[in-house]
Length: 284
Length: 232
Image (cartoon, rainbow over all chains, first blue to last red; front, side):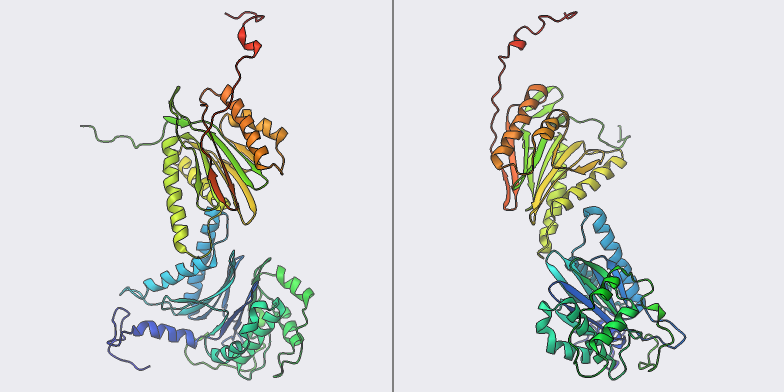
């Protein structure tokens, strides 16, 4: 995209009927590091590439638990993502207080989309620069949604956003027909492989990625680093060929099920081999 | 030229409904109430419907101030309307409606402007039966059988003895009629025009009103003061 005379503020249409500021906001999403989501009938898995800026720093938190039955992975301006996660948590808790029942994901997603739309129609605001993959369960089953800075939302069987997400999407497009009937373990395996695709040659280790799961009877939680590394090793995903059959490490995952998000992503410093690939300071 | 000096708050009820009694039975919930609206001690209105279906899954019965009940119906109509407008395969079940009503009643109580009602909320969703009650001060609980007002004192003891999980529709109706009959004899604000309603997975039905057979020829009533000491 090139600069033009219609792109200064969000309240100016271009003659072709475009809002350039909104499109630029969607560019910010593409610059963020990859986030991937996939769902089966009973589970939804979120995965993201987590790179620390330097060996000295910790990773950015890109996956947020919104409620026991909803979680979100973000790509783009993490600060905007944090604010929206806080809004989502607030909505969930208010709904639960009034109705003693979990907020249906579809309704939360619409509220989020309407919130984003407001920022595309006010001269004193700017669009949120973050794309959200919302994973959740409600009485109509497991859902994965993508919320865009434009205020649009879409439901997906599997999706990837952020930089080099096309590689992941290509992999997912090949495999998605089987996802509905997938087991939890196979779904996680596919998420890890898709993440590896996004890393483009770099070694897949638990220090560069984060995995989170939500499912029937399983509250949303982020898997801890050890579990993820075990899964990577078990599935032998590091190698190019997908030789290993999915051995459900049931015991390991039971531990993960009781684990909460607290220390999951922060501990990885010092493992960084391959360094920075994106230039902009807002890169995640 | 008096402008409004004191804000309007509910101080006492005017037109009131008497007890509501409800039980869980095999297929869902059965609820009963009479159709009376009393104006103090006058049994003024005789065709007040105090049992109403809410959405697809719930039934609401109310005792207490009738105008406040009508206000609650307006809140619930709006709630269900918005719920339907989402058009997304999700719907508010009896648990959600009960909790919503609890919040409404408790918040009004906190402002010293209560909705002067005791409510019974029952329903079935996805095979799960639900029966709860909320009072005008926001006290709420669920149980297998609930009642409001004098029903708590006259009907629930009967239900504690005779209720079981597997009542058929006929057995449930008989049990409710027994409770309503006792209320008819003993509650002075009861009228002999009863409505029974049921809710099952298929939906809600409010049956047309009927009256209970009563018997007043007990010999003990003929000369009530015979043998009493110190009566006048």
